[in-house]
Image (cartoon, rainbow, N blue to C red):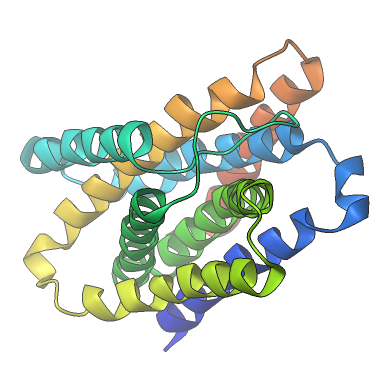
Length: 231
């Protein structure tokens, strides 16, 4: 039950982040700082929480497959996080929506699998997903606004995207116990690509020592979580 709740919480941030980005006062916050912290948390969750639970000798193929799958999705289909005022690399459309859908279902399944293996692992994956979903949800809303989508249509799209997390959690129940480590390896590959291949380059478009500091803070926060709540 808690695993489903974590997936629902993660999904709600699609809608909340999009709603936030559409507010007039949201422009006062520089997205690059959110992206930098999210990158640190995402990578640290992978290195300190997920990979220690994975037998890489038998699951390395799935680690690489997770990385390559989301590399191709992000380059060919998905909307990525934008740290600058203009997001000029993607247009919102059915293909981008499909990419986001696949991403959200996978993240929802990862939350549930992580929680079934270790509740702390499920919480760590949930935090990582929530934090990388905030810049993606904001970016999605801003691109839809530039494409002249109406408010109701935007919020409906974001809400439906958020519902895909619990869908992924439900589908995760079909994963046999012997395949759970491989699913975790796949999620780790996904997180490594998103953190290092998407979020970090976006946060570092311009040199800013605060960005570097926030990446480190994000990583340290997940390491402290590991120390305070050992498995």
